[in-house]
Image 1 (cartoon, rainbow, N blue to C red):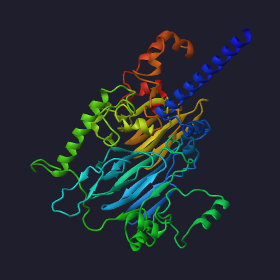
Image 2: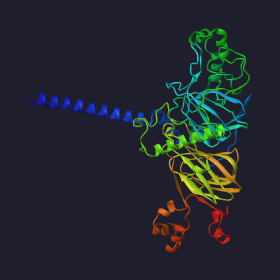
Image 3: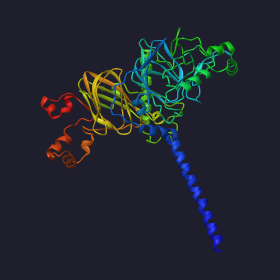
Image 4: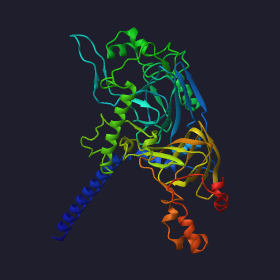
Length: 511
């Protein structure tokens, strides 16, 4: 009688163990889907750990594409600093009436409008065409398309991976946009090389891939048509008859989709009037159309921000109700407007930051940003990024910057100036001091809720330590520790107002 009982007990235990194991795997799978921590994201995390940076460089564009309607500047994505951060970087300079051709990429993009204005269209898969013209007469065709966003100086624009998008400059000056591509993001299931898939034209490859001789030979054999030195768009290699059948067009038009004889490259000039469906810009025409529409857009953005402040921090994928759906989510947030600064010191400058609490789509992209302005000789206190790499791009002016690694070694000590870029790895401490002409920058960070820890000021780590800890750690008296701890009441930005005697006591101010 004992053996059957033991066998039954063993079978029950085995079934219970398998049920628990399956439940645990389901929970892990749910967490992976809920927070985007896929296997590819884990590979990206392992790549971060390969950072071995003994020296950082101020980087400038390594390549450029001169197109009919503007210029594209690219930084080498194979540079070890970009490899460490898992990102790529580029800059668009779009002429008036210039159109950046429709494209999508294998990585999410965060785009900052450095200067100018224009329109931005993003195709969100599965969403309806909500901008449409009325049918004025039976049988007459009218256009309809997905929502178009106005972009202007200071706007931060988010584009998910694989979402087709285009940009048009309707202003009188160049539209300049700097772009970060997060190639190590979990949304990128390919390798870590940035790829742009164009839907039109005959564009030049923005980030040429370093191919082995074997891959080059494969590319030559797999190319159906010869004679084109450019990349071509994705319609180029499809059969004309297949395209004609699928799109219900004739073969001559299907051949035009390939852009085989189009030499305008990635940014083209639009001929004639650029007409798209967009909301009316004024109510009654009492004020300028452009000013009125921009004010309405800002009011809508402020209302969305107030709603987002009331949400719980984890409220995004499965608990956002009607506040923000995929098809109506905000894709832009202005961080350049001085009136929206999060930190402001009249004598020193201002900082504007945005993260997933303020700009919910960033929770999806796993990115955030900071816009900074330092006045003449002002300083950004020494600090480190707790949970993100930082990519600093200089939009105006110059500054001296120092970066220190975990061994207490200086890995960068030099000047950053306009159009230069610096990658600061996670936890590396840095300090900025503006030159006589001031300093302005935008920083892209590889975490949707990036946090910093200052080393000086009212919210610093130093202020949080007990006096006795400071005195013992630095072998100073308690009185000196008190002065060290409480000598700064500012939070982040320091004005250049110290006397010469104070500078001698604080040598870092005299950099």
